[in-house]
Image (cartoon, rainbow, N blue to C red; front, side, top):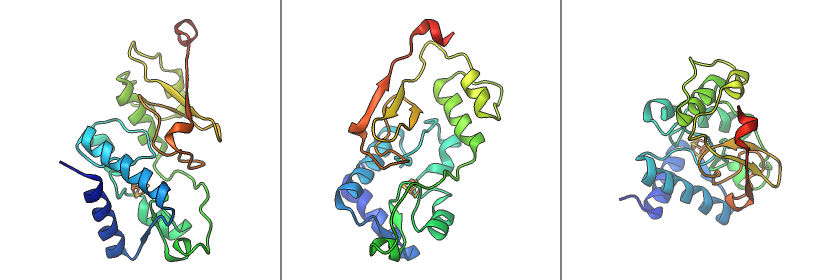
Length: 182
Ligand code: SF4
């Protein structure tokens, strides 16, 4: 069984191997590691704690930590999308951590949404198609970050807001009436 300590050790050794550091804020780091631990316990793989997942391995492969986007993000911005892995200058506080653009292709994000809601539109290629899709009975919940307004569809709020880094407690659920979802 995975433990928080194992998740931490794995992240530390991976950071060391690649010449990276882990986020210097102990509380923030703890939240990310807990997110990874819980995701691994739930799905069987350490899913990125900041992203929407399909919960199916074949569609989530690119966002299993460390994700496919970590290295280019660290190189370009100094830290990964969740800011778990950071560059030396960021670790030393010389470069601030701010929200960065999502490098994961939109098609994959839409696919994750479609698979996770089991509506499976015919391979939607645009966000518009996703929004227009009629929700199924088991429509996923919608959450918003009270700090920055970020919105996502999933069973539970993310562990960390990918935009402003607010913690899970800062997310509120948006309830959508059945009649206006039709
Ligand atoms: S963004 Fe960072 S924490 Fe998330 S999967 Fe990629 S490397 Fe891991």
